[in-house]
Amino acid sequence: MRCISLAVGLVGCNATPVTTVISEHASEATVSKCYGEWPKVDALIIVDGSPSMAETAKLTALNGHHIGELYARRDVTVNYRVAIIDSQVAQPGCEVAPDHAGRFIDTSCRERLDDFVVEASIEGPGADVRAEGCTDACELETLVTLPSRATWDDTPRPRPWIESRHHVTNLPADIKVGDDLACRFPTGVSGCTFEAPLEAMRAAIARTQDPDDPAFGFLRPDAVLFVMFVTDEIDCSLRSDIDTLTDAFGSETPTSAECWTSGVECDGASPYSSCRSTVDSPLRPVEEYAELLREINDAKLARLPGVRSAVVVSAVTGVTHDGPHYADAPDEEWMSAFGVGPGCESEHAKAVPPVRLFEFTEEFGEPAQWGASSALPMCDPSWAQAIACFPGPDVSADPCVDLCVADIDPSTPQLEIDCRIDWTDPDGVTLTLPRCTDEHELPEGSDACGQVLSPNENTERCAVESKLDFTARFHNRAGAGCLSITCQTSPQEICDQRQVEAYFPDD
Image 1 (spheres, rainbow, N blue to C red):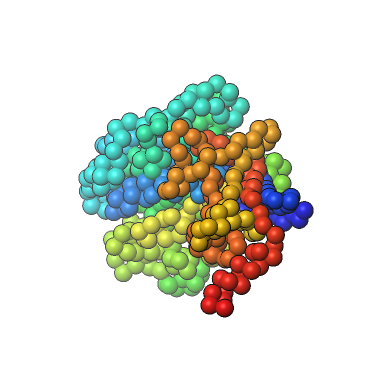
Image 2 (image 1 turned 45 degrees about the vertical axis):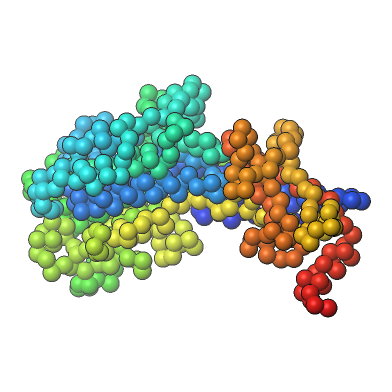
C-alpha cells in the first residue's frame, strides 16, 4: 500500500484535505480518495445605494446575478451564506430610521422601485433607473427563503440570507441563486449621499449577535468571514460624537467632497504620490473597524486550525488594476461634489478613489490572489474577481487514477474496463454510485452518481496512457467522506506492453 497526500486548491479559504490510498489485490485494485468537510464562508456584501450609483445601476444589477451564478457553480465546494445590506446609516447627512443600519435585505428590488428614482443633485442629474437597475435583471416579485436553522437558533425559520450546504440551498426548488441575487443585490439610488459602508458593516455584525434580530446566527464560529464593499465613493462614517453636519464640516449643506477633504491627506501636488486617512477628523478612524475584524479573526482562528486568515475583505470601488490613482479633476463641478478626481473611469462607471476602504482591504485582503490589494475596479464590466473564498475543484479535483486495468473483452479493439465507485460517509455507510448519464448528470431518481472512463475515452484532464478519468456528482450528500474506485486489473507487464504499442503502433 502506498499513500499520497494531496490538497484541493482554494482561493481565500482553508483547503479541503484530500488523502489518496491505493490498495492492490490479486485481480483488482481500489483507489480511495478521502475528503474533509467542505469549508464554510459567510459573505456579507455592502452595496452603495446613493444617487451617484445611478450611472452604475445596470452594472450593479447584472453583477448581482453573475455573483449568484458563481456561488451556485457545481465546482464550488463550499458551504456558504450570503447576506446583502446597503450603506445607509442614521447619522448627520443621512436621515434614515435609526434601526435601518446593517439590516439584511430580504425583499426584491421590485418591491422597492421608488428607491431607483432620484432627483437631480450636485452628485448627478435626476434619473429613473427602475428598468436597468432592477426589472431588466430581476424577475422575482418577492423573495422567499425556506425555513432553516442558524447558529444558536435550532428553530427552523426563514432567514434574510441565502445559504447553501453541499449545493442544497434554502431557496425554493425552482429559484436559482443568481435569480435571487439579481433581485436582492440592487439597493437603489435614492439613498444618502453620505455613505457609511464601514459603519453599516459594524451594525450588520452587531445584528448577527442580537437574538431579537432576523440576522441573528448568520455568522458561524467555524466559517471564514468574507466582507465585500461595492461603492463609487469614499466612506463617510462619522464619529459618534458628531451631532450635526455643521459640527463635522462647518456647513449645514456640505457635499461628499467634505468627507474627502476632512478625512484624507495627500502628499505633493496633483497627481498625488499617495493619500491616506487622517486620525484627527470628523470621520470614525478606520482602525476602530479594523480592530473589530481582528477580534473576529482571532476568535475564528481558534476554531479553524491551519487557516492563515479567517477574515477576508474586498472592495469594488474607484481603483485601477494597478491600485488607487489620486489626482484632481479638471471638471470643477465634479471636484465640488467629490473633492478629488475619479479613481477609475470607463463607459460603465466612474468612481472616486476609496482611501479609507483601500486601507481596510490592505489589512484583510489577499494580495496573492488579487495582486497589489483586494480593491478592484468598479469600472470593469465584471466584478467576478472580487469574490473570495472560492474553492477550486469538487470531489473530482484529482480526477486521474493510475491503475493497470484489465481488458474484460479482448475481442474488441477498445479497452473495455470493469470499475465501480463507492462513497463512504463519515458514519461508515457505503453507497455504490450508479453511473452518471452521458452528460455527466445524475440519473433520474438518484442523488449521486459516478463513472470511470477508460484511457481511450479520457478527457484532456487525464490524457496520459493507462490513466483513468473518474467523476462523482452529488446532490445533498458529499462533504466529508471517501470515494473508492475499484477496477479489475491486469499484471503490470501487460500495461507496459500497451504503452509500447501506443507509442510505436507500426512496430
